Image 1: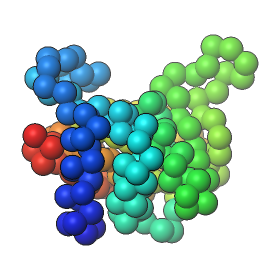
Image 2 (image 1 turned 60 degrees about the horizontal axis):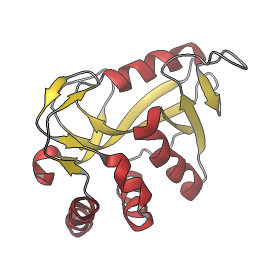
Image 3 (image 1 turned 135 degrees about the horizontal axis):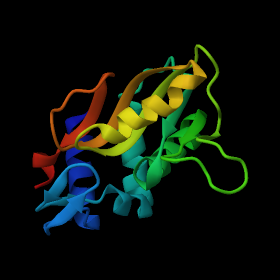
Amino acid sequence: MGSKDVKKLINMLKTVGVVRKETVTLKYAGNSAVYIDIKKAYGYPETLIMLCKLIWEQIDKKIDCIAAGGYGGLPLAGALAEKYNLQLTLVREKPKTHGRNVWIDGYVPKPGDKIWVIDDVFTTGKSITQMIKTLKPTKAKVIGCSVVVRRSKKKIAIPYKHILNIEELL
């Protein structure tokens, strides 16, 4: 990953206002004095293109699909799928209550498929761990994960890569 591109991304993210210094309640990690709102960056094409470029550099190219869930991961995964012609798996946090009662939309991985998970921010790893659990019945294998920002150094069951540490944005 080129340090010039990472520095450019940091400036882009700061310019669009992804760093919010205010007390917020995080989904799985209690309160924080800083909120990293990567979703805000998805509204700016140049920033989204740079995110895709840097994430693509991390991904094992022997994958069969990418998977994501929620507003944090899906826009980035969708952009990657379109740009690099990848199958896209949409993983729900809970099954739909209308229509078909499914946990997975889009491409449903087949046994033996290799999956790469995409998310915006890594704090506790619970969102990623939940996606892995949801994908397990497909008998596909999650071989890695990429996130934009790493807030903590917690370990999870699969290798994960990040573009930035939170300290680089502060």
